[in-house]
Image (tube, rainbow, N blue to C red; front, side, top):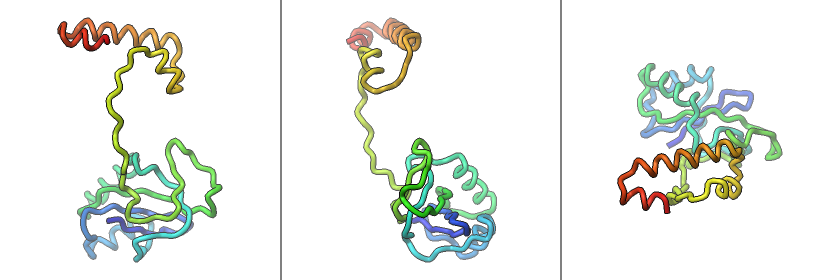
Length: 162
């Protein structure tokens, strides 16, 4: 479950929990979040900019550890989001995402990993995927690949080089 705290000035804290928050811990979290208030609903309307759900931020890791040191149990993740006026707000798409409303699926990741892909031609793969590797890097990776192939037992080595 996720509980939201309003810290004012558009700042929202989303606290991921593995069980219901103990009522005695609520004042501790309110204090920790700068006198934020617990929002009673399970959803929030509007536009919010915050970290991608796939990336637990270092800030979150530290915040969760702080809550553990405070004796607050059951917190899995805490992220800070900013309420913005519209979906036309500028943000860093490498690290952040624009959320159209917040709900209990905020931290749910529904991506399935791609199958392992064997690369035979690093230069072609570089072009196809837009990796921007220079020739020196490609040569290095080819050299490492050859060395790895040489160090494997014969049956694995031949499969590795196909």
